[in-house]
Image (tube, rainbow, N blue to C red; front, side):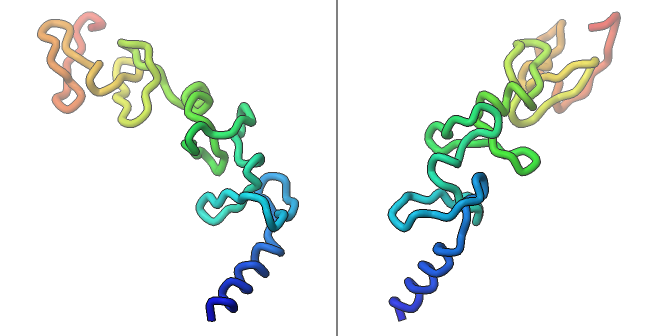
Length: 123
């Protein structure tokens, strides 16, 4: 039975094509499987810079895969306090985006993300 399973796998790969370049795979080459999508190792790259992903880490947005740098540059908002990119929870307040830990009271420095706030004279 193991031979049949291996044979079925070989048959499936013989007919498979790379998601990016739409060409078949050489039997000896390494193949990347990302959620059932198959890629040549050199075709599994960032949609923006076309470089391979460091340590295999990538972000996916609208079906396209991006390295961390390009994902942040293209899609991550910047924090109104520290200026860094925000990946994860974003607080939207006072016409800006904030890290939860950066959105703080100007008088007592308490984090306001889960408490609510009152705006006074633009602060």
